[in-house]
Length: 506
Ligand code: FAD
Image (cartoon, rainbow, N blue to C red):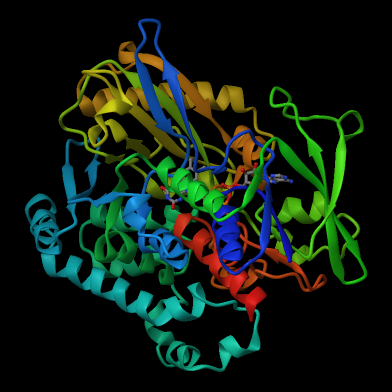
């Protein structure tokens, strides 16, 4: 049996491995010249031969077992391919008023830190983490491991547990309201409200069920791949290739060819890597027959561009998207001992920031800044006495804003804020620079409106309004990746591959 995968994002790669293990001959078609989609890497070179390496997208690695599972599934020892460490410090937090707080992996130490720095009873923190664990325990098997679009999911024991525990899941209130009830100190409310951004949502709208997210970081743990985030992609591509999966880079799929209620093949264009918009009429096109197709392309674009003649599931395709991002990659010619791998510089008005992002489609002029520095753990990611700064601002979706003007203003706001908190003028330290913005995210990975995580979770029905991992119209078409169930982020993308291929084999 021959299977095709459209897109070599993390979910596409994982799907190819799962299919190859069960005997499928698998071809992966990827429009870019490299695998990984958002989970890729690049370098800056300085005039004197220095190299700064950057992970382009994801920087926080949780649930590494889901990666290890793929190696185990193929009968391999994960450590022979991919190594990672568990972090003792999950994040350092900074505020403009000089407050600094470290979130420790060790709960007791973290509780002591919030008591000392903020005067918040440590027990409140422990209660929050226990509540996160409970929410995860009740929902994981139902919402993350299974298709929500199969009747069987709603009749089993896991569903019954979900029904019984519904009042504890926080479905009817917002994350912010729950966190305000739990914590006395507004800075701790802000810290835990931040977890809404882990799937591109707004803590003032998203249900408190999303307080499940800190469970991943504090109870299961935050990790760092020893060779950088891109080694998740690299090691899985290596495994897939060993299993016989054939990757076709530079090959953009333009059409899913259908006949009746079946997919019969794909029509693809060979792309010129220099040209982001090749004209199909001037490029060679090849139609290849397949027994089944797994699409890792953003589901909105998969329907609009590859299946324009099929019935469009409008309600699902029109759901509001998660936030996008504006990323500055800076080579910095100095080191900062007060910074760690993950750092946050909080906005003074979090509510106003989210109002700008989700109501006004704008960036706020005092944005929360996430600063990731992999050279803290992987010294060769920056020249000696230098650091590779990955600076991420939450950004609205691409709806045609004047991005060049927005970016110029945001850059000044970032420099002003970092310089103030760190007590040093940051701008002269920037040795190399590049940028990713909602437009380029959309162009490079086909994400609708540049969304980082597919749909937002800004309402309590969001989980049910992501597209299923299978097609309702074509019996041999499946969907994986951040735009479909169970959602965005590396762990959920890996789970989407598990659910989709599980349906194929069922
Ligand atoms: P994508 O990465 O979206 O890739 C899809 C691939 O399909 C692309 O390579 C594209 O070229 C290809 N493709 C699309 N259409 C076609 C076609 N027609 N023909 C051929 N190829 C096609 N997640 C985390 O877990 N932790 C984080 O810290 C984190 N931070 C992030 C920061 C940023 C800046 C970004 C951008 C994302 C972040 N994420 C994070 C989210 C995470 O990166 C994504 O959820 C995940 O990588 C998406 O994977 P995917 O499988 O959906 O594929």
